[in-house]
Image (cartoon, rainbow, N blue to C red; front, top):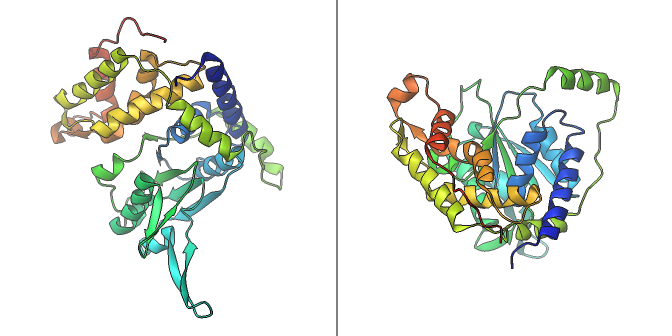
Length: 322
């Protein structure tokens, strides 16, 4: 059953409220906050590549507070073990049974801070939970629940002692973006509010159960066959670009469609238009591309390739809104 125009209007209203709520603590970052909620409502995960002190932890905490959910933060270090994230079974001498002690992954919003500082084994444990939505310890499966989203961060400056995320693992993140520094006026507002001794605690906008329902609602947004064809042509374009050694995957194409459906609903529409795809293409696809070494040497980056592919790929003229 396709989402109705009335439901899409309600969906957009809730999204606007969520974004405005989080913007109280992350000033001047409306676009990044909206992308974060689109990722959450698309059952995706977000990778933030940013310098320290730009509000990554504040974003995760504020999103959790806005949906009346639980948030957790894991500081990734070289000695972090998979069990430190997923949890472990501990033997109880009284009951003579193994009791599962849940790790920090059991939260609605999980901040994986500096994910590239942990060993590949620990990284893969986190990424497995992201993909499967559950943890299996000693043969017992433990669902992480809904909604569930991982916000992983990477520091692009200090790379000593880090483990680069393999392309196959990068592909599991629906979007990659950065918060960046606030503009001048936002910085002034932050400084003016710095005298408050108590951190801002946000009131919830909707319960977590409503977010789970909105997630299911977003999947019913109408996608015209011409939009599917448009996305397929964009994906083909990334693979055929001369600067690219490995183009976007099928998982990337699916992520672009899923996020476009959510983006359309968040814009108050019950159907996807080409502009939804264009708005998200760079954020969803750029981190999945592997460039040719010569192109990288010439200063080409994945975003340049995506921009050129969008120019070279004509959108469909008419999109059905049924």
